[in-house]
Length: 381
Length: 103
Image (cartoon, rainbow over all chains, first blue to last red):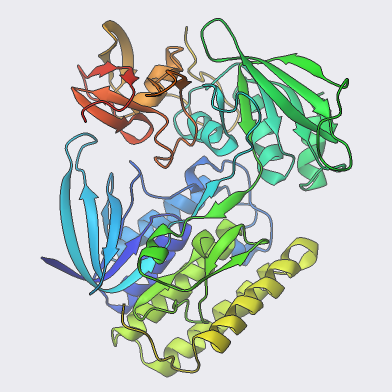
């Protein structure tokens, strides 16, 4: 069986940042990712980031992705693409469906001393009538097709959800030449930043707040043909008699994300439900170590936030894994982590961020209360 | 039908990829080598990838990142291939999947 010091699951911002830190310290690192390209969702983010310059403000996601890849390469990080981690087993065995090309795959088991789970998040779904019709998709799916693969998944779209993803992807669909027929939001107000909403408004896209999609009707070819929307009452249920029909062949759903935690569950890491972070999240300490020894987690898998927070959490996990392997002495690791936590605190400020800071502290407290501190007694799996 | 993005304010859409041919349900279509099979299908206006086993309902692109399996098709005789994360190779034979094939 092949042996690696650190196996990182996921080559998004958290996974790559973790791999870079651990490799810089001297560890042999393997990153495994199921996609054709590394970088996670960074490569579809063609807009400029917000925040301070320390957090890549003004830089487009695609450029951050390229920088990370270059740094990973420079530090000797090994990356397996087209490779899905299909299981984690006792003794830190990582089962990987490894595919050099897309269709020919082989099963490989790698024994890792430290495992960093940076599996990211997946899109939430709203189940209106006809939601499985081809042409109904996650907003992120449409964004991937447009910005990464340069193809249009449809010609005329209805966007459901007015958070930042809904607003940004609506604008990016227009940039790609897709007509955005309407933006539909169940809440009485737009969820995302005003600056993004203004761009959509200026382009003349009608924004229907207090509305939802009632039904998607297939056209002659079996894919989306018409979208029926209606006003919602205070109970968020459609009000009969307020229906309107919109001609469209594309429906994009931007109603939030949830952490991808199946692998952590398999390892029996302790998870708790957290509504703000999008679902079940692993309890972890300030080293990003979960309740199971040698298993770390970082990025959206620990609670849905942003690429900038994922990068910082990845760095924490990478440093901690290198420390566990003896490549960094504890005092140095502690001081590096302290600097990163200060940057994370800065990212978790403002009206949106502050709630996340409170929630993150709750998870750290729960780890301390339920798993133990300072050096927790871990349970053998 | 060509659904490729030819002009874009931010993206460089000029492709240096080699154009190859693949067949989908017996019809030959152009595709770019190395792009996901799904992208080639969308570029050619094909949006149904499979039909469900019980109710024969159509399914197509949903997550686009290899998580949901709604875009699974039969590729070179192998069923359940996620076309959104499988790169195009010249001469690939692709078939719309009926239910869960290969069981």
